[in-house]
Length: 143
Figure 1 (cartoon, rainbow, N blue to C red):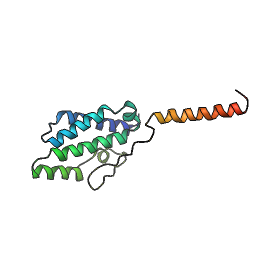
Figure 2: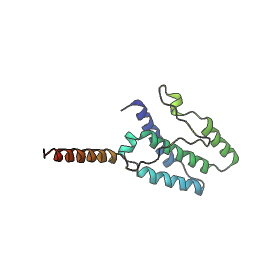
Figure 3: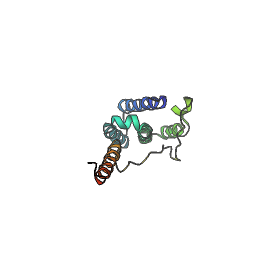
């Protein structure tokens, strides 16, 4: 397993612990916490190990939403925004990691879900290849 993938998995586990250990103090934060729990429950082993960056980016974006929703006072809100915009990130302190770009709201980019979810796309490509090969062999009167 690549070192960057392992660091991303470590980040993901830290975010899971953060969500389970941090109390939601507003209804909006509780809703984000519930959204995270449902989403994380649906994350497959394949997604964690082969779509790691996208999974971690989504978890970090939910954590950002939670932190914004959980801030009550103006001081807390200002601190959350300061950390989102200028706080250190894993890729900034670990040499060799790919920097992740954030948009103006502090969110990381996320890929859209494919029409055929992973790993089923490999199965679909294999089935299509098998079908083409079978048709070709049939036309050549080999089978």
